[in-house]
Length: 91
Image 1: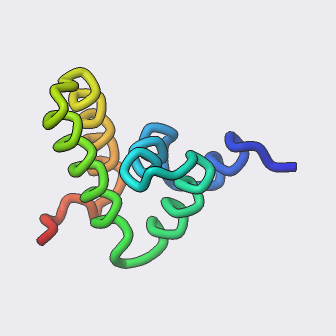
Image 2: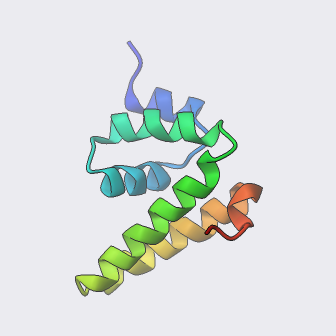
């Protein structure tokens, strides 16, 4: 039986990136891992994940959770560093 960690090791996302997807989509982390793994392998997926993280940052700011927003900014920086397609601006 595969564990979450096993599946994460097969995915091109970090655990923090998966958590950001789960937060944005309001789904369990395992479902977010599946969604993220699918998206990361599509042409449109990387900008979609980037937008999700940006939305999470905006939501954290809106509710006054500066610490969480800061953590998500670190996640975004790591995502952009690891995924070249994430550097392009989204519309």
